[in-house]
Length: 285
View 1 (cartoon, rainbow, N blue to C red):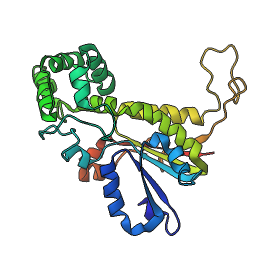
View 2: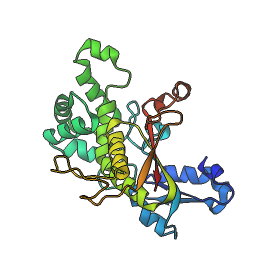
View 3: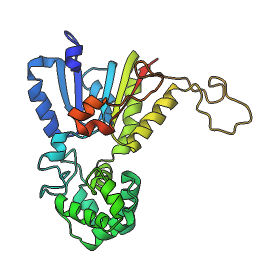
View 4: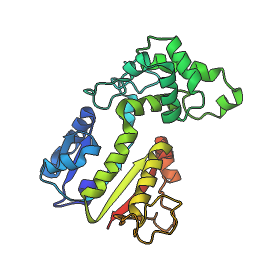
């Protein structure tokens, strides 16, 4: 779609940590010639990746922070609850840390912290205890059964209200930890703002509250004329104390004062996994 919108001379630099996804994208867009430039890497490093291709300013940056349905369902990733898949969860198979390493070597306390912080899972400690008790764990469906067993011992009413698999939050937490995702969100947003030309737009699609919180706070900071901490004896007027100048302006949802764009009911009906998506837009000043 971005290639179509940039016809006839626009170019798209596609960055992905997953070489398998990048290969599929390259095959799909093979007819676009050199207008599509695939690059394996981390979007947090987009400035360096762009500079290697003599690109020093861009008209737009789209960050899709989610993982694809294919990654969730295909063998080899370790994201599936149902498949007897190795417990991997790395986007880049060359990364040193896998979910297997984390699950089988981290202490109970460290696992508790990860599952609670990155998965916002209220039963984090009991899940961590069950993981340690059932080691070694080398398959994704084995881990899913262990986590589900903890949930099945909980409130029957809460279990009936659950719309997703009981291991969803735990798997999210492990995936975030393995791929250091939240750290890269902040880095990537800052890099995108620096790379954008005046009038260029930054569009970010996030899929859970931890990501969206970072996006919201970073964009608000970049759009603010003052980033002084609260409690100063006198107000900071247009950066008179902190020296900060806004680098972007926030773009509202069309026809609304809200800054967050959510999927329509029609989109959710055709793609149920889009229900958690949140899109925010900023324009470079």
